Each structure stands twice: as structure tokens, then as C-alpha cells.
Amino acid sequence: MSKVFRAWDVDEVWLFPASVQDFVPPGHIAHLIRETVREGLDLRAILSQYDEERGYPPYHPGMMTALLLYAYSQGIYSSRRIDRACQERVDFMAVTGLSYPDFRTISEFRKRHLGALSGLFVQVLGLCRKAGLVKLGHVALDGTKIKANASKHKAMSYGRMRGGRGEARRRGCGLDEEGGRSGRGRGSPARR
Image (cartoon, rainbow, N blue to C red; front, side, top):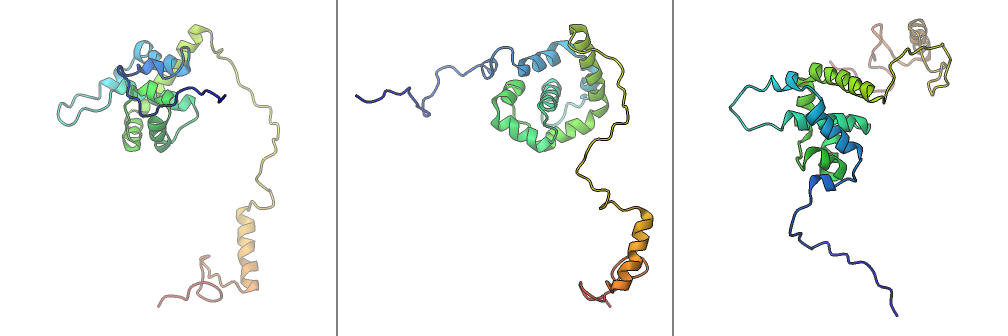
């Protein structure tokens, strides 16, 4: 008696295409962000900049805004990584509705609407506050020192650098007065 496995037919064609909402489970944050942008945010500051009728139609500004907000919520900030996620990750496909903006389009959208996008973050915080998800209050820093991977022995002050130049001259490293190589010692020969 042999083991029976579930069918694995990657060449099967679907009679009806899957809905974008079916890509991720109900209650997923991708649905929340997409619907918040579609219904809860005021996008007039972004939409008002699109008055040119000529040229190829751009991606919908609401979709691009939802894409950026979702990518930021997932810790992805690079336009190239967002581009790759739109092609590889189903949660991003659920946000964009199977649109695949390239990294230049994402970057240009971000640059063009930087001021309006910062206003949207304020709107999102307001919506979260209404829903009781966040509490706005005071943040205080107490001056606690936290261990870091930077060494105080490797960091140089301006005075120590000036002193280091004199030591380099004593060692014969060949630094001229401006701090560059004089052509002596190691390195490429001086140009004539």
C-alpha cells in the first residue's frame, strides 16, 4: 500500500481568476491599509497634482499611497525592494490589485508627493487615535547610556587627526600639507 498525496498540478488553469481579496486571509493588515486609504484618508492633496491629460495614464495615486503605507508598515523603505515585493509577495499583490509599479515610479511618486504623504501620516495617527489603537503622550529621554558597536578608541576628533598627520610624517607615509598623498612611499606615482 503506497502513501496518497494531495494533488500538485502547477499547470492547471483556473476557470475563474482568484480575487485579490483572496490572496491574504481576512483580517490581514494589507486589507486594513488598502481600505483605509480607499475610504478613510483625504487624498485631495495628491489627486490635485494630476491635471495633465496627455501621456500614458499613471498608476492610481490611491494605490501608490496604499503601497507605500503598507511597505512602511512591513519595514520596507527601499523603492527597489518595494518593486520586488510587488512581484513576489501576495500581500503586496493584494494591496496593489496585481499592479506592478517599477522602482523608478515608486521613487518618483514618493519624491513628488513627500509633503502630502507626511500629512497622510498625521491623518493615519488621527484615525488610530479615534479607534483607540494609540495613545498620544509625552516621550522623555533620561540620558541612559546604551552600549553600541562604535568604539571610542576608533573615533577621531579634529585635534587627534591633526596630531595623526604629524605622526604619519614621522613614519614616512608621504602625506603633503593638504592631507593628500605626495606621491612618495606606497601608492600610485605622482602625476606630472
